[in-house]
View 1 (cartoon, one colour):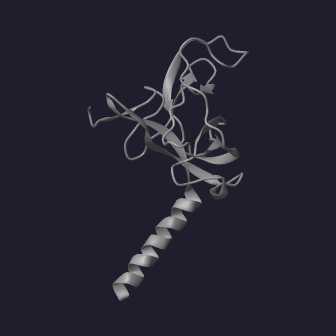
View 2 (cartoon, rainbow, N blue to C red):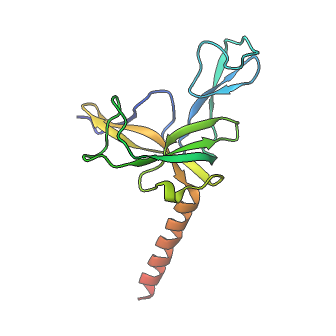
View 3 (cartoon, one colour):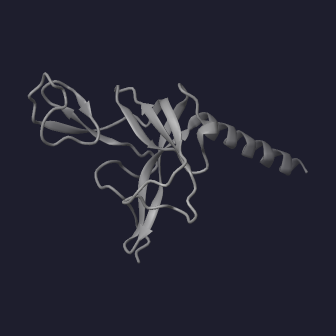
Length: 161
């Protein structure tokens, strides 16, 4: 098995230090779509068929959220046995799109509030015979900042001891 991490769905997001979802922009009317469009513009008043790839904003605001208390049916691959519920967030990006995705590992509905800022991160989804498969998830920015501040405070207190 390879140790290389690859996206579970090729072409939907970039990886690296600042990952981003990949959408398309209609060259006729400027409508932005996600996932990428290759056949026709999603704007009903446009007949455009040419698109350019665009990286979407990494940060957005929570539009809605919930948790998945039940295990989704196949082709869903559970990350643990027994099944552990996870949070989902619908996030509104500055481009005007609302994108649904899982919330980052370690965060749940208690960490979310409509209107709060989240940012895109890439995390492992599952492992198969080719290696680790990754997906995008939404990480609460305020919760991440609070965790970082707590770690800094703990380190400072430890250095004073």
